[in-house]
Image (tube, rainbow, N blue to C red; front, side, top):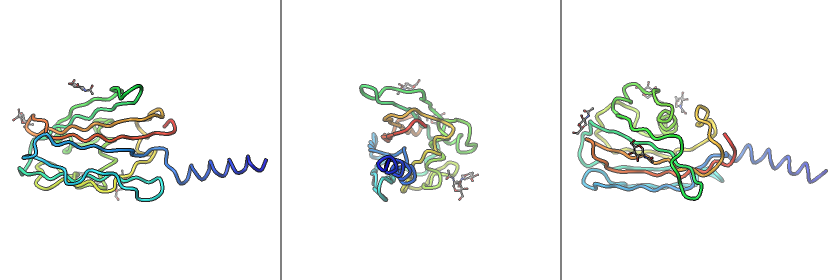
Length: 175
Ligand SMILES: *[C@@H]1O[C@H](CO)[C@@H](O)[C@H](O)[C@H]1NC(C)=O
Ligand SMILES: *[C@@H]1O[C@H](CO)[C@@H](O)[C@H](O)[C@H]1NC(C)=O
Ligand SMILES: *[C@@H]1O[C@H](CO)[C@@H](O)[C@H](O)[C@H]1NC(C)=O
Ligand SMILES: *[C@@H]1O[C@H](CO)[C@@H](O)[C@H](O)[C@H]1NC(C)=O
């Protein structure tokens, strides 16, 4: 009986202090260093079990007026396999009128308050994403079964792929 209570308390503790969604890794690649380079691309432990994502992109050819992004989701089975979502969007058009793509909106909601991306084109400054955290609420409109995922964000300017960021995410309970 006593050990049952300990288990219950432990479950409550884990529920409160541990979100079931977290970043596990990040990889950034710049394909054209004369256009963009990564000054920072890392996860930081902010508190126990709380992982913040940090990216700083230096843009070398300003202003940037023409951006497309490809956002694709992968789920790990034996190796990462494309999973449900793969969209390519004119970002400048999207930023004029967000909330049009459920999958891109998820991404936008997650980083909008912790980055300097939330304005319309052109971009004439570095892109800085600071201590982005994940929680279950982020996936309210896009429930995913538990597992290991990878979000690939590829960015093009003037129809030429310039960089990509791969964010690895662990979901430990079905959302
Ligand atoms: C996503 O779609 C594009 C265009 O349809 C395709 O070229 C690309 O290979 C797809 N990516 C994935 C990960 O399936
Ligand atoms: C972002 O910040 C605004 C204003 O503080 C807040 O109303 C909104 O809920 C926040 N959005 C997210 C996704 O956290
Ligand atoms: C992002 O920008 C849009 C358009 O300017 C604005 O309506 C929205 O409130 C902004 N969101 C945040 C979280 O700042
Ligand atoms: C972006 O640039 C490409 C390549 O120069 C061009 O084909 C395309 O029409 C441009 N898109 C917009 C929305 O201007």
